[in-house]
Image (cartoon, rainbow, N blue to C red; front, side, top):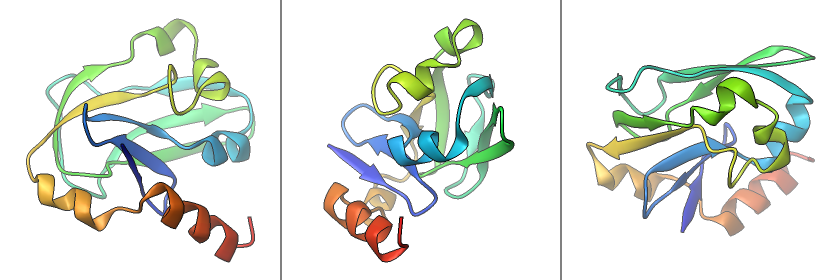
Length: 122
């Protein structure tokens, strides 16, 4: 199951994989570079996790939960467009080992995220 943030990140609650939402990749446009963090980086919920550059702008991506980066999607080095093609699948960014699983309860369900987008007029 995926949970979402209001800053348009998602986390798969079963695996710890993190990425940006389809909505976010549409807003960014064509992604040309993903500045992935080092494996082992410790993050707190809300910290800048990495940055993504598109033809429009560079954007910070925030950690949806606290934990340690245990894996990065190295395919993005050669193919950053994977984020555009499959933002909530093959375009995942990092895998986080959660240090505080309770934080998942603070995130939005898919339905709540859709309602949030509608309330924002997206």
